[in-house]
Image 1 (cartoon, rainbow, N blue to C red):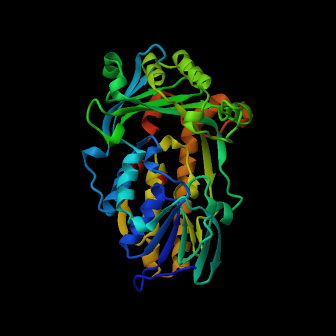
Image 2: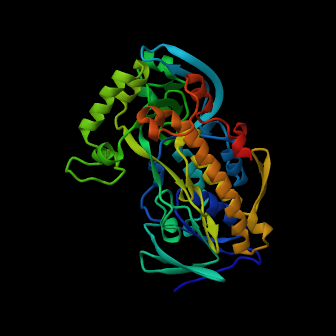
Image 3: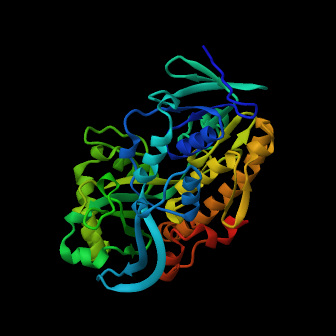
Length: 430
């Protein structure tokens, strides 16, 4: 039977679909405001085992502090020097950019720990929902129905909420993939360690881009000797043939446009390691060679024509997906969540006045305001990431298919723009 509960005159009940970072941010922020929240996550098991290294931004830390999460030296690994390596291993450009590199799990764990256990249901998928003037009714794979004041889709790039609500809003393949992996610091030979730790390394073979940086190791350990070294290697890849082959396991089963790392065929791993020695600096190639299980992800763009309306809202990758080059995916999810909840904070030197409080509890009016702001911000983030990603697309496509604009070539631009502080990107402050 559907149930509703209210915890105060201005509080309400929210159903959050998706228990990853965006869902945990918004759930915890709503609970802090007195809302009754239920998170439904379709996956089972510990999500902390997923994800890899991430860049961070001060805006992300601001939202975590808003929740009372301590930000100390254990949050990540500090890097200050970026170095671009030529094929012969020489350094062709250096730039000083202070940044904290972290891991997806390091952000996930404190968010999950603070969410009351009763508010989280794993292994339960949304199958449909119906909006009414005063409520939304959601149906789930276990046969249950729940009513709430607000339904939030925080269920990622393949969002069920978005598919049901805006079926024409589909991810668009960018034309390249990212090979990824993390090498344990303790497995690095001394000479390699001396050249790379604790620096942020880049390589720029024509039409490709690789970056590698230190991240927390097993158990979020940031002690020297216990960290990891994460790499992300962008390579143009034809969707219809090459990507399909990469996503086909040893039994001949194609898993669509992604595949679980253990199912990647061993010969593909051997091939990418051999290619690394052909086109990358020996230092970076060695990182890939020594990594036990490289994996890959296809890179997409996604822009939703609406991210809120009535009693439904999207946030994070369910709403907009930007290519990873500006390193803002997690930060954007956190900012979306904060903008959906009624707080007054200053981020990027501008005030974000959260709409639910401003609308005095009128959810549809509040979400209309949220929709305008987050669509504008999401569009700018996607455009910015395409501009940076154009550096890769330019070489891999015929002239008539090349992007109209791209980041100017040259290591000085790549090292400056990748993961740049959000406060320094003028169009994201507009």
